[in-house]
Structures are given as C-alpha cells and as structure tokens.
Length: 513
Length: 70
Image 1 (cartoon, rainbow over the protein chains, first blue to last red):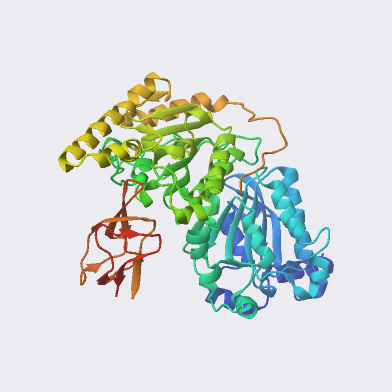
Image 2: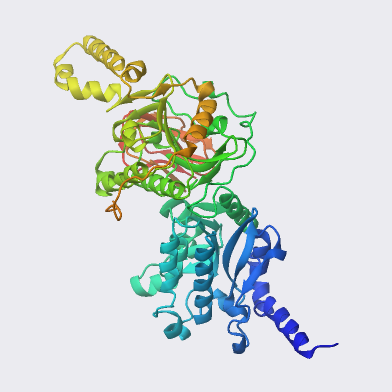
C-alpha cells in the first residue's frame, strides 16, 4: 500500500540529509572541505551503525536542516563513540538554541554510556539573533563547556577542527584531550581579525592570528597539524585506538611488532660526548613497535618529545628530552607540554615512559620573567601525581631539577633505570667545577696549570657521579645495556600492569598553573 | 629577506656558512653553546646567505638575528 505519510517522511529526511543550500556546498568544495555527513563516514568504521538524534531539530524553520549540527553514535575501531559535528553548509555551522541542546544531549549520552565523545568542529559561533535562547541560560552554550570539564579524564574527548572555532566556541577544543587541526582551514580565536582591528587597532591575517599552523607550533593549543580532512580524521581514529572507552578500563592491546628494521642500531645512537646533540626520535624508533609512534604536539616545544606508542602491542606514553633541539633543555612550554601529556596518559591508564637526557631547566632573565618556575612545577606535579606504571630511563644525563621532572627515584617511578653511560648530578662537570673552584681557578696565573687543575677536578667530579656508584647506593634501580632496553621495558610494564595506587586522600591539589 | 634567529640564549661557538652560500631549509647554519650543550640552529627556509650577523664568541638572546637569507 502506498503510504503517503511514509513518503512525506522519507522526502523530508532526504531533504535534511542534504544539508544547506547548494551554493554553500560549492563553497565548501572550493575550500577543500567535506560535507559533514562525508566526514562522519570517514570517522566511523561503518556508517550503517550510525544512530542519529534530533534530525528534525528546527525543522519548522524550513532552512536550518538538523539546526546545523549532526549528533549521534557510531563505531571507531570497534568502539562505540558519541559525536557532534557542525554542518558548515547551514548558516556557517553557527549555533542556535536547538544546536546547543543537541550538543548538550549527546554529551550527556556519552557520559551515561561511558564512551568517548568526538567533536567535529566547523562553526562561525553563536547566532547573535538567538542569543537569549542559546547563550546565557542553564542549558545555554556555557553548559557545553561545563559538561566538557566534567567529562575530562572520565571519557576520551577528541576534537577535529576543520574550519573556524570562534569566540566562546574556541573553548570546545580547549577542553578536549587532543585538538587535530586541518592546515590552512582550521582556526581558533576569541576575536576575529576584523574585531581585532576594530577594538584594539591591530591589523593581522586570520592565519597569523589563529591559524592551524600557529596554534600547533606557537600557542600549543593545537596538537596535530593535518594536511587535509582525510588525514585529520585518520589521526582522530589513530588517537582513539590507544584509549579505553573510559577511565575505569584498560587501553586496548593489539598484536605486537618488532621495531622498524630500518631503525638505527640503538647502541650507536648516543654520542660519547655528553654535550653533542643526537636525535631522540632515532632512539624512540629503535625502541617501540614499528610504525606505532603517534606524536602529540610535534611542532610545539620540540625540545621535548611526547607521543603514544606500543611496546609489544601495549600502549605506552613517551616523554623524552630531545637533545637535537635547544639541547633538550626544559623550557616553560616544554614543561606545560609534558604536564598535559602525563595527565592524559594517567587519566586513561596508559603507562608512561620517561627517556631522560636533560641538562636542566633553562636559566636566564627571559625564562625567569616568563615564570619558568611555575611552569616547571606543573610538570613535576603532574609527573608526581601519575599513578599509572611509570618507568624512568636515564638515557644520557639528568641534571638539576631536570632529573626530578623526568620521574627520577624520589617521585616513585616503578623503576628508575640507567644506560651505562648515564650521568646524574646537580649539574654537569664543567658547571660544577666552575661553581666550586671559581676563586681557586682565577688565582692560578699560568694558563696551562689552570687548565690542568680544571681537568683534574672534572675527572674527580666524574668519578663522584659514576653511574655504578649511584647504582651501588640504590639511587638507580638498575643499569641496562641499550640493546636490552626494549626487552627490559616490555617485561617491566607487563609486571607492573596490576599496579593499584591512590596518590593521596584529598579533594584535589592546589594546581600550579 | 628572511632572518635566521637564535631559538634560545647562548654563545655562538661555530658559524657553518658564509655570505653568498646557498642553504636549504633544515640545514644547520650556526652552533650555539647553551646550558653546556651544543645547540645547532637550522635555516627555516631555502635561500642564499646575504649576511652573517654574528661572530664566534658572541652572546645571543632568544630571537636575536644570526643570519639574513635572501
């Protein structure tokens, strides 16, 4: 029987599925942007599983299909996830009251189901004409951020940014675990370039003010810079593959792989000269399962490397100094980067591995004025509070507070290991001899005699910080040959996997910020 | 014209290029010593060295110009 009601319904659904007016689809294509429903196809394993709520939101308005946002449930790597996705063909993805209500409801669903929440953002911001209904109230846009804060650390929250994320909307990415930005198209800003010119008189381009590359390399608000939308969505899937559905579960384990056969021989990577640079990425490649390293904040504060990887198929978070960049010295930004990454791993039961080769925290006027002490405190605090299995490896040297920040013995790592060439000290031999014998050195007039004195004192100092002496005093838990480090780490992380620890009893710390 | 700047405070211990040399993005051009570490500084673009602004032994701050590329 021909059912007129059903025909009408099907027509209406098909109409809504098309999104906004054709001209906006054309504009999308010109900007190398995909339609929101095509983005969802790329995100999910299989679109047939997709459930959608609120398809008819603002249906009666006539020209606002789904009220500019798709909300629903699908599967990513076999795991159920909740999603909100702005439709840039509907009033530039702007938010009306139903848009906001839909976002709030899918967050509530994610919370109840205890599954990850993915935000696919491409929105011009609030519809000023609807502000009374969508901005200030109990279930106004503020509620979205309240929910995000509440969900943080409870379920993974992932943001992929395809276009603008403006003004208040810019806080959606800020509260997510990871922000993946599409180069040239994605942007985040509180005030647009036009507003910046009107209000403070600054003339600036959108790319300079809040572009993807700027945020991923300078501000650190962005985590992954993707060349296009396909790459961005693949990165979101990859990120989620390391995470459990929620904080009560363990991360998924996959079949292990040997390290890349083309990786450098781990025994040849570290130069004998303590002060010469090497590339920590070579060391990581030689250590982890082939192709498993997923770097987070690759372009930001590159003197420290952070990323997720697998050791024999099991997820691990790596925090490694990078001697190739700025000598591997810790700065305010690198300390922030570490604090954030450690918190991410600890929240979702991903063990952490510290690879230390650090001359210390940076010194000098510029960094003191920038508050390096409070930034460093964030890193030390996050590292100390982490109760996941935690292993620290002194790859070459760990001096000063750099030693503390890289999870050394006092901070209760499950093990603090050293490679045989490792040096642990308040400061390196050159600096230490200068500090202790400065007056004596100045008093020796003959340059040769002075140099001989310095060399002799440095040698004595080296003997005092000899790694076997430290192991003998139980300062490090073991000395491991580089060629056996991978096996040692796999064995130890497996052994520590039953670790159950509560850091301490209290409401929360007074966070150093 | 593009500047290659110091990415941290330190002392210039080696200048690896001369005016007139062609450099490519990512190439080490100057080595600083800072925090007792050798810190190579790379050109961030391809170009020809128009001017070397520093000498061995100079102290430079974060952001100071080391080379000018054209």
